[in-house]
Image 1 (cartoon, rainbow, N blue to C red):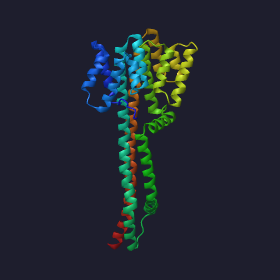
Image 2 (image 1 turned 180 degrees about the vertical axis):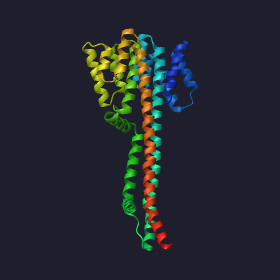
Image 3 (image 1 turned 135 degrees about the horizontal axis):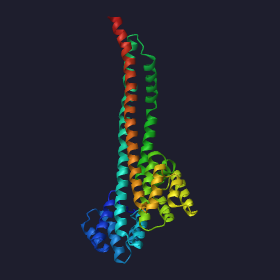
Length: 348
């Protein structure tokens, strides 16, 4: 049986709906029944039915959410903590903002990758067309006229010939890769395994590392404000942003430092998760009792810094692709036009 999951797009909306129910004083079970009556999507209605049944049996909200197996473990853990500490309203609002931020980050990264990839594919197709189709035509014409193309053009043409002969193999390899990618996208187990391996190898570096630190800081802010100890907060936040080798090592250092008696700010500073200025902010926040607010602010700053870095990378990649492919096309055309101009001059 296919396991249903709440879509990433609906998750912040559902957190907001729960927040409004709790804030208005409507019993959560009755509110969920109202949502179920108005729901038109069949899959969403399926897990809402399961959620309502669990609530009718007297389960707490966190247990009912966990029973459906449709929600992230982080959300169910935070809701359980909120029910214990009486801060359900605050935590639901924080979860809505958290998942909204994650959704925006994913959309920005997806858009940043898609545009250069599409541009590269178009420009590469133009170059391949020139060296495999256009240059051989000019070469035959020049041979008939007793003229040879330049060495650069001949080298590119030979490369194009090899590419054309290997076309069947390249097409087969592309089909295999496309089939593997489609299988990984459609089969949850394969998709999760691939994502875990990718995150393990690359999730702690560069932009992805900044995004992981942003998630860590946001989770820490929610956990600390919900009444968890710093050790428990670090452990819970590490589950959310974990998986990358570098991030796991840093969060482990932070937990060890707190366990050995260091102050939370010193432990976070010594872990390497945050830069120097951010560490000073954390130490000041610990003294003034504003650590949750400061962590939330650091999460927003890390996210903005990551998005700006993505914009800079995309801004550098797109012109580079255009310049390189335009230069290749220009070299090819000059290699063809120069012998042709020499031939016309000789004829004139």
